[in-house]
Length: 329
Image (tube, helix red, strand yellow):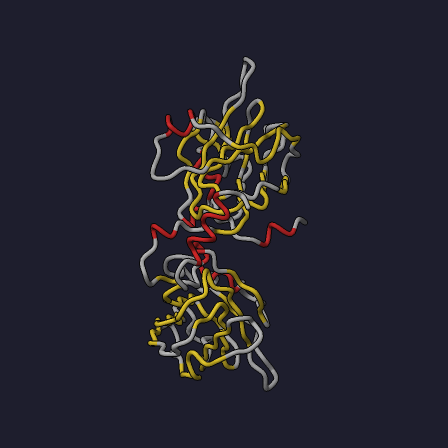
């Protein structure tokens, strides 16, 4: 499995991604491409157009050509790889596909997007049916949209666009959540993720259920569980949200936060505090120091729905990052 699949899916609907244009959606809507849930299939489930598929499916072409779908990334950024998932499409998957990228400001119309000059990310390549088709991307520039082209027609269940978010600093307030995945934060270490990946804590919005968070197995020793986060920018943290929503019989009893400039030496942000089950907690932070990394310790184990770290980034950092990736450096 390619390493890039561990990176966030920048096209996911969970981050605000969406399909803004599709040439044809006769059998199944292209909106399925960006759903965060794995595709499912119920055999012999028919509607008035045929078998129901959890994916994008176009009609059979009777003339030369191809079909396209344009996706607005929920989190614009640098793309490291794409996953063209043809799950459950067996006799009706496209034999070939290509992916292109585009970087634009504002909110262009579908007509403007179609007329734009796109950058090739994945050349026309063969696909396998009912499979995850993984393609690494070497282009280093930041993109806001991707275009999936299938040759000549057929069905694709999901399009995952894995990469690193690079936000436009002009669109961010002075103080914002520097632990948000959508702003470029990332998980850098974790003691245990038996029931739920810690990356869920950095997702936007409220957790939908207990599985939409970080949860560890039960500890039978005297240690505790922890996770480290690389922040979107070095920042002075001023407010922390520790949200145990949905974790009722398995919330941590206590938690603490520490910060670091280099990921080696740590200083206190939030001393050990008691937590309540199924509760959003907010704590003011007065460390007075800049952190590039934050470590969350929970005692002794349990689950956390969301982690928000509101901070004031170091002046110029995000602007430098944005310019560098806009130029592909």
